[in-house]
Length: 347
Image (cartoon, rainbow, N blue to C red; front, side, top):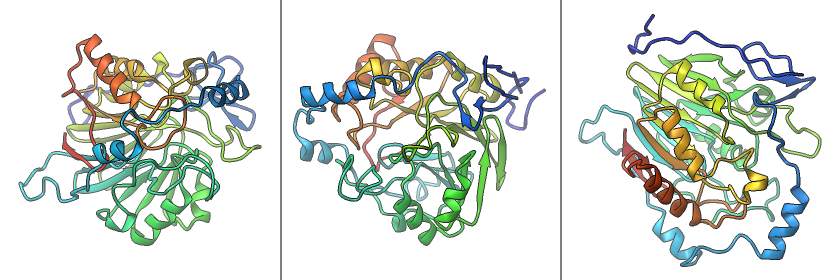
C-alpha cells in the first residue's frame, strides 16, 4: 500500500530488548528510558576522560584561531532566500550546532533552538559559544513548530525557548516523552509529547518521533527520566530526518525502512573524541557518512559541530574529517553539505 507521497508503506516492526518493557516505542527500565541497543555502555569512564583531557590541554584551538574560524564559518542569514525567485522547494538554514530552520509547505520549523551564549545551566561557566549565533529569535521568520530532541543543555536552552515563546507565540512545541512539563513551566501553551514511532499532524505536515541512541539529564538525579529522539518531517514528496544526538547503531536504518529514505538529513559530525568514551553517544564523521549511505539519504547537512567545545575534537576537526570520509567512500560533497552557520540551501 502506498501513502499520499507515493512511498511504499512499511509494516511496523517491534523491537524487544531483553530486560526492558517495550511495545513499539522506547524501551524502559522502571521509570527510566533506555536505548533499543542494550550493548553500548554510555558514560563509563567519565572522570578518566576529564583527567586525560585536562592533562593533554584538549580541545585545541582551531588551526587559524577562534576569530578566524568564526569569520570563515558564519554568515548573516537571508530568511527570504528563494522567495523572490519563486522557489517552491524546501529551504534549510543551519543556525549553528543542532539548530536547523526548515521552510516547507509554507511552514517554518526549527530544531533544538539554541541561540544563547553558553550550553550550561550556569551563566558564568560551561561551554561557551565560539561562533556568535547568526540570528536572534526576533529575527527568525514566524515559527510554526519547534522540534526538541532531548534535554541536554546544548539542545534545550531555556533562554532561547523563552525568546521564541515571546516573539513566536503561535509556535507549537513537539518533544519526546517527559519534557512537556518543563516546556509548560517556561510558558509553552501548545506542547505535544511523543514516544518513538508516534506521529502528529501539524497543518498537513507529518511529524514522526523516531529513535536515537543517546541519553538524557539536566541534573545529577534525573538521568534518563526523559526520552531522547530524532524527528522525521514528511510532506507529500519530501521528507527530512533530524537525527538529534545519536551514536551509531544499525537500528537507525529502521527509520528509512518504515518512513522511506529521507530527501534531507541533518546529521551530527562533531563532539566525537575520544572514541572510547564518545562512540556510544555521538557518531563521528565516518559514521555519519555511513548513516547517509545506509538510509539512502539524498542530501545530508552536517550539524552539531563548530559551535560549542563539548569534547576533545577541535572546532575545525569535524569538517576536515568529514571531507576525508567522503573522499574514502566516494560520496560527493554535493550530497553531504558543509555550510556556514546562517547559510541556506534549497533542497
